[in-house]
Length: 140
Image (cartoon, rainbow, N blue to C red; front, side, top):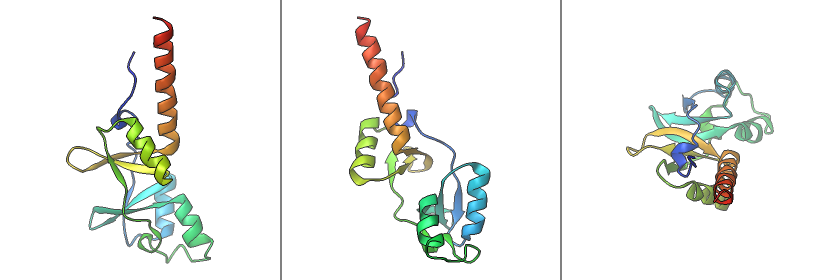
């Protein structure tokens, strides 16, 4: 019975990367098409920040800004928070819960972003691991 104990076992590899100059309207279209709720904001192709659906609501629509003219660079959160894919789930959960972060981007051994993990997904993986260990120990 395999118990996923490392970050690499729970990543969501679906990523959308858009340039800093992309408008909110264009970003929302990409997010909808790809069924993701955050985008990595890049500068010349290099990851720099993130825009989430919460950022769209709080920093664009609540402020009554025109999404056809507001760029991701104007509303993004930065720096982009990452975690190494070889770290244990417990380290990811600690980072997410201690800092109140909802998502963290996962990097490979070369520092390349390969996916993301969320607070919800990490909690679910942790609970599943505990349940699997409990089942294993109850059979001994």
